[in-house]
Length: 288
Length: 114
Image (cartoon, rainbow over all chains, first blue to last red):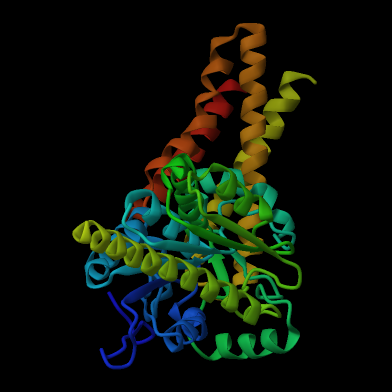
């Protein structure tokens, strides 16, 4: 199921010498719109960028109640399997739920070049969670999760007030994101988190984790759990000081994007270096 | 705490939760405002918490006093979780009705206990 907000930014062969694709995943109750600027930035650097709406996220707000985390995983795997063979290097990156899904892909696909996890949401323990959160464990395990929603926090996950205002305006006019979290999708997110955490050891892909110290939705605990439990040799963790949850729209967005670009360039470059070294070695052998 | 007080308290909670849950079933699609929806949901879950605690106390008393009729009441603690485990959005009306029925049965059982 795809909506107009999905995007595919492909270069023609002449545009770029890079043979590298990046698959982006948006956050819970969000849409590819929230990844658009990030996608454009990566596209301008010469990468092909793809972002699609998760099942249940789109024009009909009821749809989100009908999906499970397995639908999200299958969807991501399907897109990955479709796109991966087209590129020499391939990255996945996600925000919030998207980061958890990216980790799921890394656990199950060893041919992934790199992973960028932004505001990884494995626990809902941010500082802006509503007070009634204490009732959540009972609500989550009973049928009440279908009746219960909690509204999006007033800060909308953005510390920058100007951006927050324009985001609020945009959200009231369009369906780029929901203004509340149906508890059932929180249940699915937490089930996914449990599933992903169980298999973190399987992640061997180079990874960049970016998380804000002041994330309103999920504390740095999520990022640290990932960092401490994965098997990747090449892992980097950046903690932001002046952002909330939506790190791609907040005060440090440029720093985040630059860090991502640097991480991808390093991996692609080291890939190239390796192949050059391999060619040299082959040439030497041939000469001998 | 005397047992009759506990039973009366549980009866009160049980009587309260039935119309609240029924209202929840009817209104959850009609309330548009997410804040109002969240507030009403919180109220119902708050009452459900009391419901579960009350039955847990009855069950605990049953174990302590070795009274089978009170131990049996413990089944009403796990029923909401069993229904929650199997419920899905497509068959929400069926599972909601089942949940409502379990509240009514628990009320009937309490009246028998009284």
